[in-house]
Image (cartoon, rainbow, N blue to C red; front, side):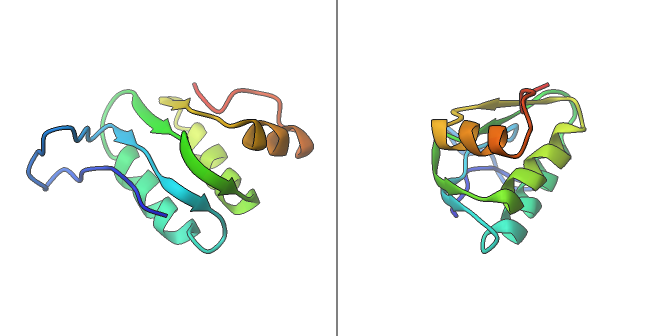
Length: 100
């Protein structure tokens, strides 16, 4: 998993948005620790934050669990949700939006 997120102490770079996390590749148990760390950094910012899942190829229940935990902050907008992710969420019995 690669991510695009800037940390508060990092210098601002053109095109970087510290309130946006856009992981690329797989979000599985193997990337869960890195994904969790990225979500924690993202949610350290005040106000609304965004999670763009458009670059995700595969997702498993470990990543879904992390997204649902982050959703409890009630200030995350999730975009780019694939049909695969929607299907997995439905299979798990989750029908609400990942966004708040």
